[in-house]
Length: 137
Image 1 (cartoon, rainbow, N blue to C red):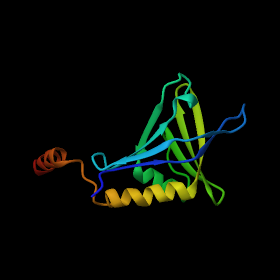
Image 2: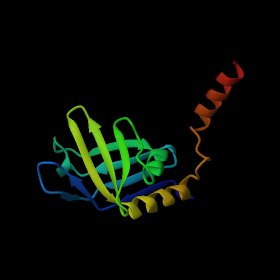
Image 3: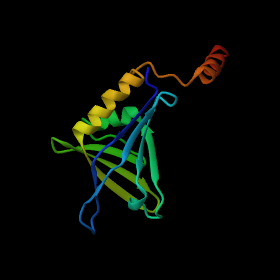
Image 4: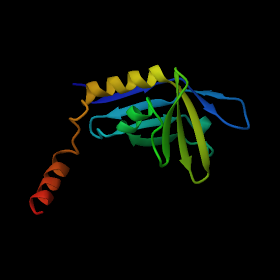
């Protein structure tokens, strides 16, 4: 069984002041952190010249492919029939990245091969701890 998934994708950084910038972020999924999806952005697109990683719920990605989802730092919504926009909100500003919806769907489907939906666990230690807490209620 494969425990990790890394998928480079093509995307476009949309800004109000400049033409769209083509970028190659990498989508990442790990069985060890089954509820999370990570997107690693290359250093040349960050304000400080370092690579940037954003982490958010896999379920948010799933929801955002069909309708606007998210109210916090990460918001996802369809953009026409073949694109999806992911917005990243930070104290110093917001970045909107356009992805091909097919690439995001393919990544999501591949993540299900790593950990099936509904089969996510927090790990044996956390699961045991939560069960202990619930037994005391």
